[in-house]
Image (cartoon, rainbow, N blue to C red):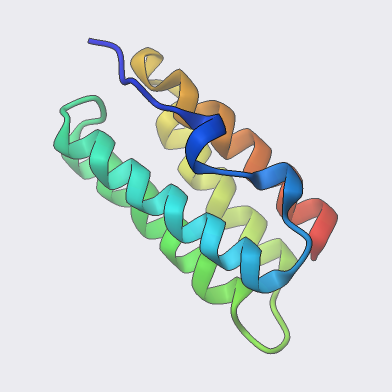
Amino acid sequence: MTYPYNVAGDLHLEAVQSREEAVRQLEKLAAEVRRAVEAGVIEGDAGDAAREHLERAAEEAAQETPDKEGILAHVDRARTVVEGVSAAGGLLDALVRAVEMVRNLF
């Protein structure tokens, strides 16, 4: 089963220029992971862990003084979970780009 993920249509990680937009993009990515779990592409427990890490990253990014390393750690943990799922290649690509977004913005 291949997950039909439309990165270009849903996420615009390269265009993010504010913390607020970064938070929205991380929240969208967490929602997409949830949809991948519901579609059976990512096993439930692993997918839930990836989603929770992305939600924590978004929460941290929304703080008045966000911890860049904490955000990166959460996004990277989500990436690690998705990395082993070949059918979730689009999600993996988005997670790699999210790491770059955090490095450049925070």
